[in-house]
Length: 356
Ligand SMILES: *[C@@H]1O[C@H](CO)[C@@H](O)[C@H](O)[C@H]1NC(C)=O
Ligand SMILES: *[C@@H]1O[C@H](CO)[C@@H](O)[C@H](O)[C@H]1NC(C)=O
Ligand SMILES: *[C@@H]1O[C@H](CO)[C@@H](O)[C@H](O)[C@H]1NC(C)=O
Ligand SMILES: *[C@@H]1O[C@H](CO)[C@@H](O)[C@H](O)[C@H]1NC(C)=O
Image (cartoon, rainbow, N blue to C red; front, side, top):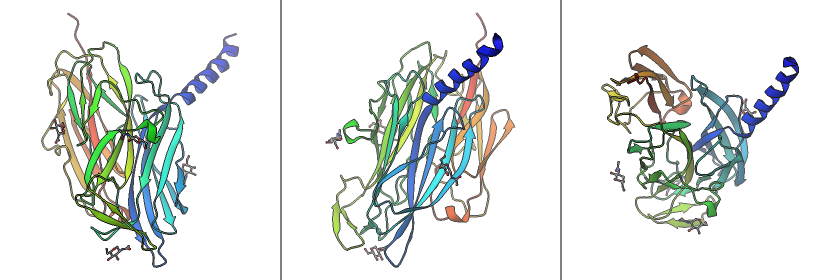
């Protein structure tokens, strides 16, 4: 009897995990080469976050999509307890001319019990490839990355400064997705988190005793710092003012809120970073073919540091040397040379509250 029950149970479990498993995505792009016949190539790098590493999904393309010349499934970073798996990929497209296109990820569903009522996933990237009159080349999107899930104790007011950088020197602005513009399905923001255009997120305490999950669906855009023209291969031009976004990329993740901690002070229950950890939004320089080592140190007097989670270039390598000491080593490949690559990390700590 037990034997006949087991397969049924397994089947149900598999169905459940396939129906409800998404924890967000992000995508950035870099122009690669312009050819004498007017065709241009662009590389789109993305992260896809699911509960299990066996899940994946594909981006659709609308507009001047040209041909997909290369698809790389670069790497997988898995959270040790099985909470999530982040997969990185890169798509190279060869466009017949420099008109832009949109690429879209759509499907279902996000993980269970998302408080802001999001079931289906939808993320859109708008790629602008026309020549810019101000910098004399094609646009590069803002560069960013994020972990699939961020945790905040429900009683701690916190600001999170997202990693958002533009290699062209444009102004980067963040906002929630817009449902009417089909940027997500739907875009209802979490009531507990507000976003500033400077990409700082502000969490308002909820004091909830149980862990609650929210889908955070952001759009990041780059704005020129002075008016400029976009020039198409056929010579036609369009003016972009400082209020016109050039490109847009999605940044989506899960915010996990709660339970509360006895103190919100950094370094007590919540870990804090110590030198030589680089500052938030620090820019480091690395040579292709040479290893860059980033040393990270964290402490928490009232909890135990259990690990470092990171989201970065696919060829970064993590090392733990115990007692809150970690390193990330990255040796840029030749194809990554001349570009900016985002990397973000958090340390995870476990609170062991003694009774009484
Ligand atoms: C990468 O993954 C996608 C989605 O699963 C798949 O369609 C594609 O064939 C894979 N590409 C390579 C080079 O393995
Ligand atoms: C872009 O425009 C600049 C002048 O505005 C020109 O010098 C350059 O060759 C153009 N580049 C491409 C790739 O069309
Ligand atoms: C949302 O998108 C719609 C359709 O593109 C647009 O008309 C509206 O102004 C946008 N809303 C905001 C707040 O930007
Ligand atoms: C971002 O903007 C918010 C509110 O507009 C402000 O409080 C905060 O200091 C700004 N953060 C940075 C890093 O500039």
